[in-house]
Image 1: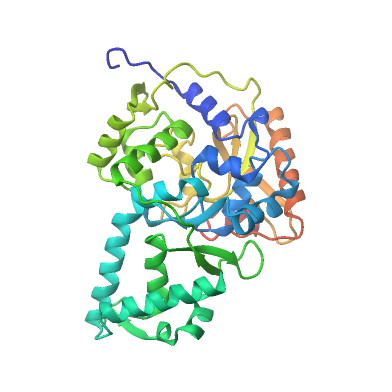
Image 2: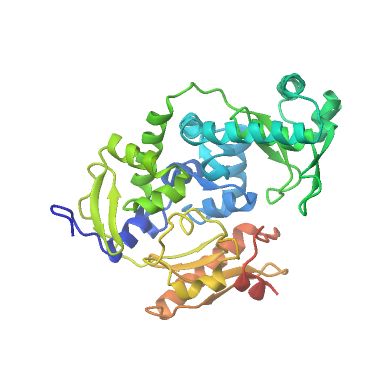
Length: 394
């Protein structure tokens, strides 16, 4: 243990998780915006995750879908956009400038360079042509408010231009300009994901102009993003921070210094908490149960997960790419998984029965019934399916 560093054990880390991630019974939120603000970001790669993650943390989840749609598409208090590690997240609107400056700028530069390189290799038009097309497409999007790629191509037909990617290689393919360009504009913070086509579970979506935000200095933005995340998820190791942000280790260390992060001792080594957050944290007093969706930000929040997820559970709960499936939680740790069957029934299985008795079973069953109640006739299948989820859903 480092001199002067306080030790934070597993029990306290789980207590922090239950309270700060709004999972303990007395910590549940009233609105989806409160959930996103508390967790900093909700995974948005699978659209259903946003709603399921919010519903799991609302004191009254009955209105989850309507409240989340309002926040995303009417009030725009939540924004679905590219963020850390080139992944789509949902952020509080007030955090979009911080995310863009801290993580988006560097990724955007690489994405645009890659697009221009691939187009040049295929003999497609040059950067000047692409700039003309993108400005025309952005003007069309501003006029429409929201639009699909196909609708934008009606206004700017050059978006339909095709070029061969990786010609002669095993992964050769044909890309349209719209597919690649809109992705680049998304990473650049110029467009965001809009209302889906169909229901809230649909992965097909419209594009919308990004909310205006002031330019920020990248190092300052990185410091602010790290401070927000440590407040929600601290303590965390340097490896956790590097993995979650996608930054270089030098950037992580610079941001830790800028916010005056405090070092603490964890079972796996040195961890960090936000300045002033190294005091003891008591639990909620009552054990809690939760059913969290695939890609939930709590289950995916740390790279080093042994303190809340036993290694033996991973083959059943994760896919081959490291995406977590639906998980069952009991008092700060993952104990199993769940799925929805075609008839709407929510089924679950406990894989780790350590400390999981009758009280836990009753609480988990109540959460499953609550989830089925607000889902109603909607059927949800995770975008990235895992062994246990597929078995339970069959």
